[in-house]
Image (cartoon, rainbow, N blue to C red; front, side, top):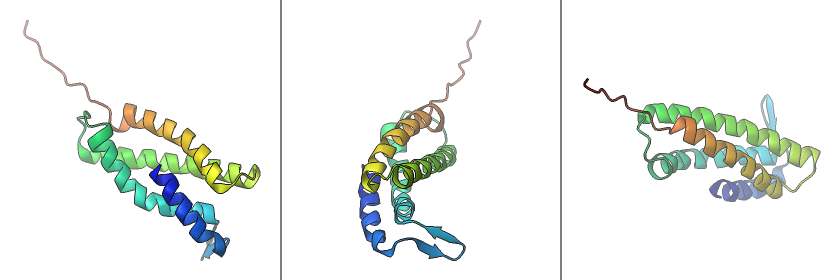
Amino acid sequence: MLDIVFFSIFENRFKPYGVMHFGFVAVSPHIAAMIAAFCITFPIGFYYSRYLVFSESNLRGRVQLIRYFSMVMACIALNYMFLKVFIEQLHLHPIVAKIITTVFVVTFSYLSQKHFTFKVKKIKQHTLH
């Protein structure tokens, strides 16, 4: 939800500028909004995932952060692709496109975070015979 709120705020803020040119790259308002929202939601998402959602994970924090970052990069790629298709090919409103995209990406993210980033590492128990 936080990502959608920030995306909406930034998308409305960037829309009047149209395509923004930054040297060698041009960025549409909805992609700029996605990047800006990411800068805010990444640290918040990691904190919530580590301490609230997947608090039973016994992996080291550094390992969790590296894995979280790699999964978030995959989610950004999915966000980018879905937004491009939904907005530029199917001509959906950017906020509607973001909501639909979020449903797909959150499902992928939750499953990957649960089974990879914050998984519970099995501790080997030695038994005496």
